[in-house]
Amino acid sequence: MEAGNDRLEGTTLDLSLGGALVQSPRAFPSGTLVTISLELEAGTSLMSSGARVIRTIGTDCMGIQFKNLGPKESVRLQEFLLPLILAAP
Image 1 (cartoon, rainbow, N blue to C red):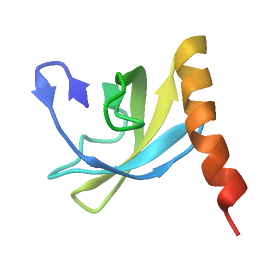
Image 2: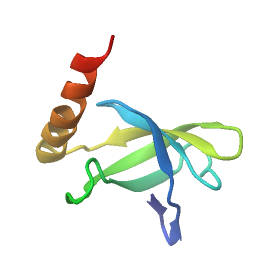
Image 3: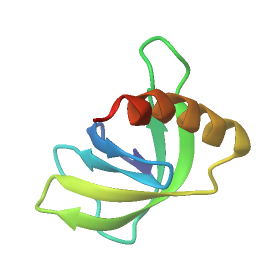
Image 4: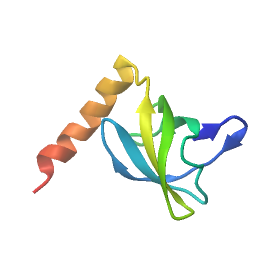
């Protein structure tokens, strides 16, 4: 994730079509506009989107809402999530 010149790497704890819960060494404040790049599958190109931090949890977790997710990125995300949804108990 990047906000201006500030960059954080983190782990996606939860992912949906609308956003993600991300854990990182520290959190951007709520309301921060960020650019997020996700590696959906190892070895594939990154999915990128504008996003906004909509909530923080402690000092190291952020709820991110995707903004302006393009059609190509939306389809990639749906294709990634569908098998996970179908496999859920």
